[in-house]
Image (cartoon, rainbow, N blue to C red; front, side, top):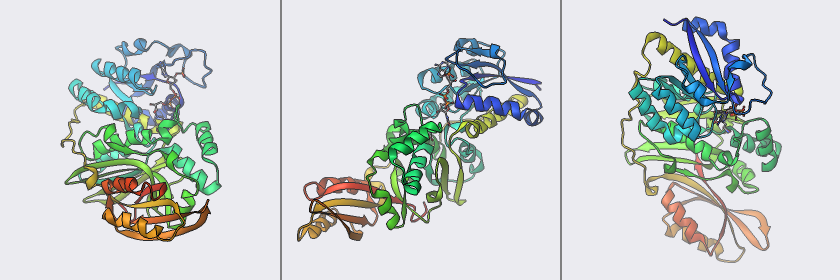
Length: 430
Ligand code: NAP
Ligand code: HSE
């Protein structure tokens, strides 16, 4: 048994600072849980001149990553520096040196997770990444352990705090998109380049990680069908509400015998679905399993201490394994080949908001296009607003395939301008 576990911390920003705070403030509890003292011995930063609010000895801060990666006395490396290539290389090097690694880096885990987890298996080292998805929610451990006995059939998640914050502020406080994004940035939820948040890439990376785990396969980023929240048009949130839906940026992942479908897009989510009540920067993941049925985890998806909670819990797991001498004893090999469903097998109801000439017979032309595509309509409504003599028509379909939907968009050209279109989710709960 070790009396002291030495940590090298790569990054002392929002998350790194939170990690140091928790290790300091919960020192005695952690010591009791681990039978050892977990101590940060070295910290990597980029800018030596930045003022830092810290209880750590300034002498342990370095700008030379090799100073940490080549230090044989360190047991655990925590990677919270962000970015892709430097972080990937650091994780790889640490594993090759036989260190246990904890990371919060969804970008690296979504793109290189499979290879890095295999490397960790080969090296008999732990590679934990709980904080990479949904900040403070223990979703990775839930999929790996809590629901290990079940067969997951679908996941739906609000896994990006920034977009959820923006949509909540736009709906409840009438804030503009720009003002809400600026506020999310000020509060530290948004990425350095917030296009990763608003364009759905951040959520897509998280869905890659969750889907690979839930379905024991390897899902790639290009397998995810992604739409930006910038496609949401003025008035869409109000129309959604009128029909009993809430506009949410949802990641969904579903599996059946034809394969897996993964998407991140703004959707009309039924008000009755538990995810529609998840507001502000909060995240939630709704899981459907064969045996468990429905279950949902809810909590803060970003922020210093919530994210650091997950990082430190990973540190505890790695320390416990160190004390027992069982690091890296768990295999990460996936069970199933990667099979992605064709668009013809991905079904949903759809919402369309169209602008047409306000002429006799236009409605029947429209409905003919839908029926020629084999699409059955659930409801058709003319919006009272008229723009330049044009009328707004709203149509909701029954279940159709994504392939039919894309064909419809093409076939509507010339007859209608498509103002917006969304999948309808959550009426059947999963
Ligand atoms: P951050 O505030 O930008 O902090 C990054 C830290 O790493 C800073 O201390 C920076 O040094 C240092 N750093 C970055 N690149 C470096 C380099 N090449 N060499 C040396 N030092 C370098 O980032 P963060 O928000 O803490 O995020 C860290 C990771 O956690 C990211 O992968 C992020 O996606 C993930 N994550 C963040 C959150 C969140 O709420 N923030 C939630 C979940 C996951 P300086 O201090 O000198 O600039
Ligand atoms: N930008 C991310 C979000 C941070 O808004 O969810 C947490 O991963």
